[in-house]
Image 1 (spheres, rainbow, N blue to C red):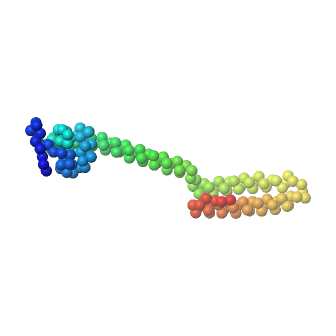
Image 2 (cartoon, rainbow, N blue to C red; image 1 turned 30 degrees about the vertical axis):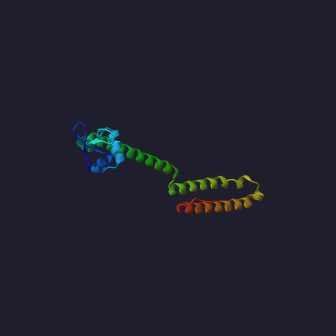
Image 3 (spheres, helix red, strand yellow; image 1 turned 90 degrees about the vertical axis):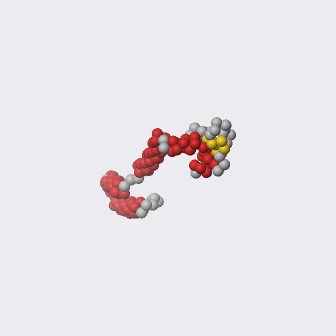
Length: 160
């Protein structure tokens, strides 16, 4: 390492030497200079003792580390909140399979009850034919509903 003595008697080194000494990239050394962590003695000249002391102070600065940790924690918390919000939003769209079964069963009972009285309100000569048609329709609806529940249980979307 070719250290130089400045006009003030301090030993100075260039950015390349300082970056090797501190095990940093030259760009990181320049960033620390811009932040005021490492003093500068002139063009590509850094006081050896001042640079090392400044860097050591910066490394051991509890306030900086706590602020950095707090900032990182806030970012982590915000990300966790965002993920939780997305999951909650998606979960609102999901209905437990038992709730789906109950809904389908309830709807089927309503359809049966509504249609059960229909033949009685029709003329006598078509009642038996209508009863048979209604029974066949209800059987098809029940079969389709049962198939839809099985499809949903398998994780697929039902197709009608």
